[in-house]
Image (cartoon, rainbow, N blue to C red):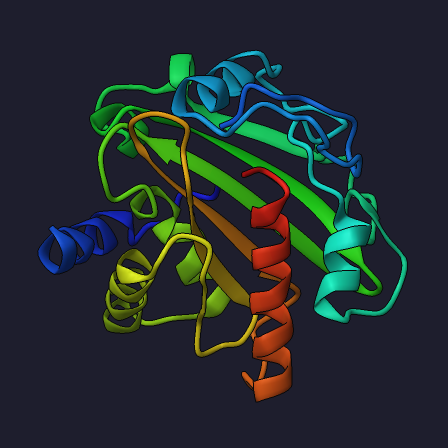
Length: 221
């Protein structure tokens, strides 16, 4: 996850405003029979990933099925549209967390996977923390991908945090959606989906991004 120069400002704004799995599978594989999402399971998955990332997503996401559910056309598979040599999946938190980092202050783990649908890259970030708000560590990603101002970011994260589990909340940019996930046991969890670049936020595009996020969420809970 990219750490922007504005993280202290974003973190302060978020604090003022508001204040997982044990299963593993091949990338793109269905998660039938997978264990329920849990904080300890996601942390174990993150801790088991190499420091330099992995070539497959360790979570049971089926991007083709999610794209179909969202009505998105184009070939869907693991990895970005253009192979840059970067890992398909990375992890933060857990044993990697350092003092002062969000996932150390609110212990938890983040697993990030990259897919593509047609000509668009798709980032899927799955985060779980011991206490709310689990979406806070994803603030720099939301800001960077949606182009939100700090005020817009604060409003969006509050709206996402207030939503019911399973309901997608889409940014005004139309390309980012967050869904609170249900956990087996204690903790808080979110899934964040970023599809392509920030655009016009048209109703159709926003609906598809929201449907895509909800489809991915349904695959891990």
